[in-house]
Picture 1: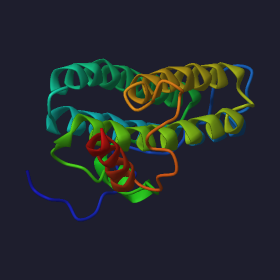
Picture 2: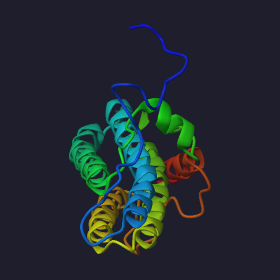
Picture 3: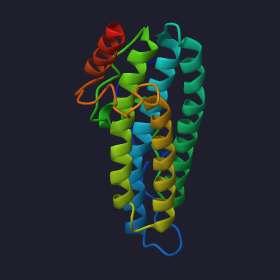
Picture 4: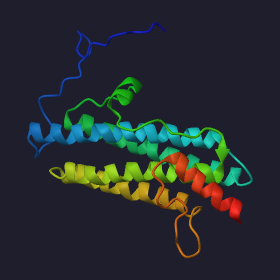
Amino acid sequence: MAKKTTRSATTSVSSDADAPLTVPGLDAATGHRVADALQMRVHALNDLALTLKHAHWNVVGPHFIGVHEMLDPQIDGVREMIDVLAERMSTLGVPPNGLPGALVAARTWDDYDLTRADTAAHLAALDLVYTGVIEDHRAAIEAVGDDPVTEDIVIGQTADLEQFQWFVRAHLQGVTGELATAGASGEVEAAEKVSRRGRKR
């Protein structure tokens, strides 16, 4: 496939312009503003799905199979969230952008830091990944508040993401509830904290 150096947003056969309408009960400006708030969530969830799959492929160690198999349903769940948000954007009159170039250009975070690593290291890093995604999803709840239907969708997704993080954190907590990644400022630091704890046992 030939590489394109530029991409026209509007051509004779394609347009990324907002539609001159939205759902009944909202004015077009409000509907489009709500949809625009969803675009970054689509980008973040696309990135999360890829990151989870990357960890699924690269996890090693004695607990490999449990973590490997735990991640697949989370990946499927996140992919479903992406589809729901993108279709909601279209419903509101704004074409969603799922292209990788748009994701890379828009994102405010770096690539995941781990490749082949043991289960504890990946789970520690993924805990921080989930924290970032969930914090931004919670902020989006307020951003889409002018449309209760969209707000309900984002609230439901946030609950599911928090449950996925709970599954991850259950591997990182002690019996008193302390989290092994507490205080870590990055994925590598979180992984190292968990690894040090494992060596002390």
